[in-house]
Image 1 (tube, rainbow, N blue to C red):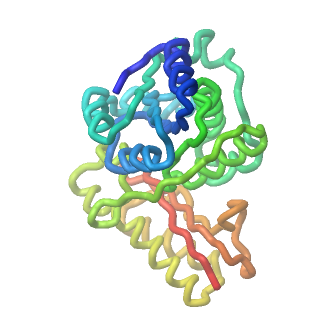
Image 2: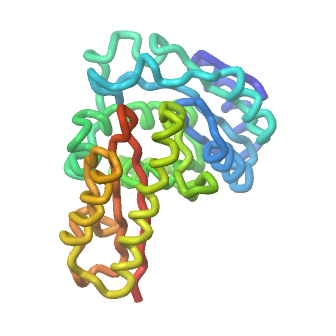
Image 3: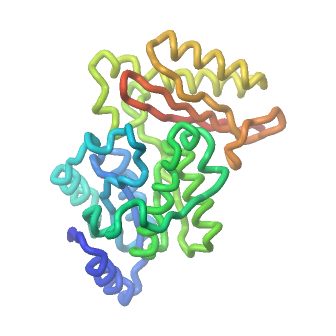
Length: 283
């Protein structure tokens, strides 16, 4: 595996692979890699000849009071995992390389409406940061395939919309959420949890499963299902952000006639914000 920090060197390396007719895959990450990230790299290897993984803690997608400064940075350990997974190129630029004029003066890519729901409502500007940096990576690497995890279900939908709306010749694939043995979705932020909070955290997925089962059994009172889940989260010590039952394609509130439904959830446990989701396919 080679490691590259500058855009011009990245483009030169990719150009060399292109001249050999290789199919390029991209896995964008913010580092602190876990088994879920590694599974995306392995998926990219199955679909492509040459895999590029990026590690960049993107300041543009963090709010003023969020965890940018303390976000875990574990580059040496990440490199070991990428080498073991068979990754070919690691792109890990400095902030000054991607935003040479600063964040405020940098051109932004915005996906309206979809970016303003759910996590977008709680974290204004977050998805603008995501779509901006992903569009930059798409232009720098020009991959044939890009892979994102399904744990960030809304992020995946936003990136697919951006790719579609801008007519980018890139196939956006998704990778299944990997979970700990107790059901907690793997996340770089799980390391923030105290031992006691870590014991409580799997309840979020348990309530998603219970709510999905209610819907599968014919319960269409989505507001009541959400309210019940939020109450249980609060009683367990969470501070719920949202527990929304939506149409899987539009992410708008689900209605009784919907066949494909996704339950999106976000909640704070202490200062740690956890997100998760589950999808239901009816008849």
